[in-house]
Image (tube, rainbow, N blue to C red; front, side, top):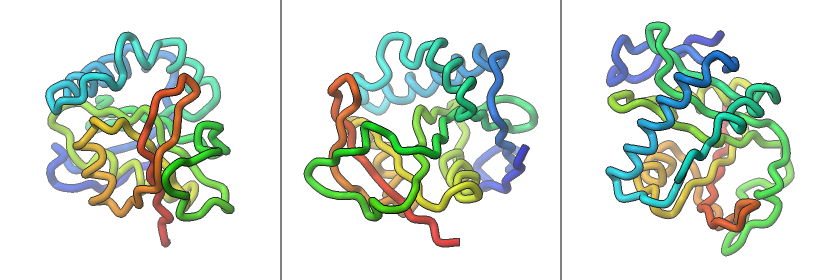
Length: 178
């Protein structure tokens, strides 16, 4: 488990990140429900609809060893996927191009946090930077808070990618200099 100092806006200002386990799925589901509610409150009505991400998807991420939870004082406050492998949805980018399309990269997917916790994405990036220094992420066009945060944290907008189901996403990349 990695412990990371975060901004003082997080109660206790200490977060830890660890691999998820199947027994974490009920708490992950609660976190993701709160994340969906935050999206709806900010006007993002069409990202993560229905039961997305499903329990089966969460369990598959856990089996593949790419699912993580973020804890504060032992309570799960966020969840995310960090996959260090080529992502098929990133093979083709439209209306732009990747900052670096030659080096291996990690992709952050399905990041969500509970209400009232700040500094989560920064902590996840520090964690990811300890694994790989080339990070990609995508988000829905209507997810204005995430788009703003990605730009604030030094991500470069690269263009549009399409998910396997055909949905459009805005793609970003950050090369972290250690």
